[in-house]
Length: 121
Image (cartoon, rainbow, N blue to C red; front, top):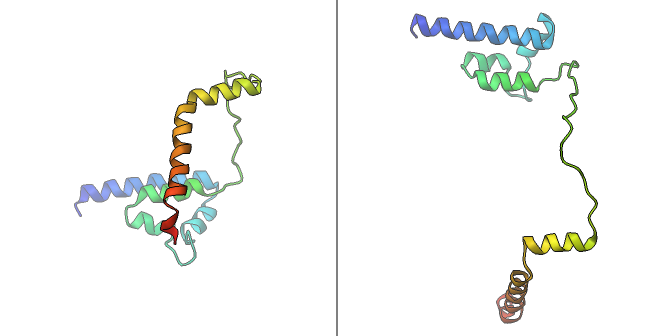
């Protein structure tokens, strides 16, 4: 590995380690997290850094609960709920799937049920 690539890798690892400590809040918690397998018998986050798999490492880091998560409600929608009558709902469904197509599908189902029943035997 060239010195330049090695230096780049060290800078990337350093940034990820700093992010880990910042996210988890304490170096001892970060150390424990780095050395704890992500699944039973699985790799440790530190292994992903060694393998230069920073994307997977960061994914596990972001998935880790810190207890400081903050719920941000969604911005209010500009859409307004409007009550619809049963007739309006049926008309809307009719526009999505016209009766002609439903009737053809029903005929196809009826045809296959009556003319292909011998296949099951």
